[in-house]
Amino acid sequence: AGIIANQAIVKSQVIRLTELKVAIDVNFRGLESSYSSGASADERLKDRLGSLAGESEKTVNQFMASLFKIRQGEQSLKSMDAKTFFAEGTASINKAFELYDESAALLADLLNERVQNMQTHFYIVSLFSILSILVTFILGIALSRNILKSINACLTSFSEISSGNYRE
Image (cartoon, rainbow, N blue to C red):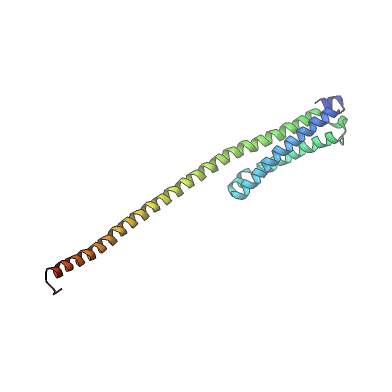
């Protein structure tokens, strides 16, 4: 506001504008990168946030271009309207927050869905594990019974043979 009102820019304001541009750039690029990663992972994210992300990128880039021009002294401060500058900044901040709010709600939904899918997967794996243990237990009992029958038959035969009965 001081820059536009005074129609001049001093060194401390250049530094502050540079810091502001860097902060906006870093934050928005991080948000944009997160959106791109999410959109490539889940098409629903792209469908629900695509137009909002495009609008947000456009308004932030316009505001950053104005900031850059002021910082570089390329734009005549006399031709710049403070209200327009603030309206641009407010619009870009509002769009970024709108994208953030919509993303947060969508990501919460997607996270809940993922947790439910993991729980379902856990229950399925648990069921198959329990069934596998039961089948193994039943097969173990059946196998041990067959072995015990054979051993008992041999013991009976040995008992008959030891008592003098050689017919079997």
